[in-house]
Amino acid sequence: MRIYCEFDVKKFTTGLLKVKQEIPDATLYGMRVAMENFKYDCLNKPPACPVDTGRLRDSHEISVSKSGSIVSGTLRADTPYAASIHEGISRWGTPYRYKTPGTGAKWIQSKALMYHSDYTDKIKKSVFQVFRKWFSSKT
Image 1: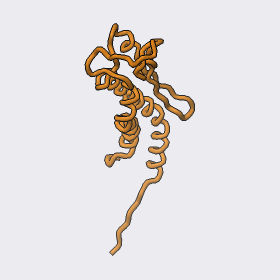
Image 2: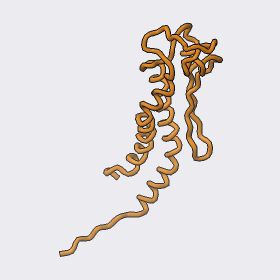
Image 3: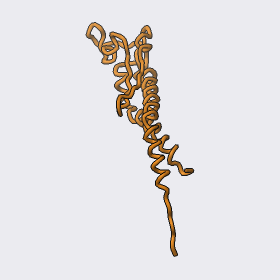
């Protein structure tokens, strides 16, 4: 008895080249999804961003960029007092008293620590979809 098996390396090589071309865009997309989720969590999950006038909450912005092979995402809270309120310190140097229930200090840091694997999974999922596209069992 003899079993013969054949594999077309050309299809595999072509697929790898396509994957290599598509990974940067897929990574950018995954990073954007992850950063949007991060921003949402910071603004809505306890401890959430404090709200007084709404200016601090409204100042949260995300950006995603690629430089060489590095894809990065940034969440920025752009008010002069964002850092001190995040750390729980008032402008007078005393502990800040949060007025809205469910809000509190470290609303950004806490989400980065609690949900970092969820955010990285979103990036991985986006990249893995490229592999599935080119190397699914249908091809």
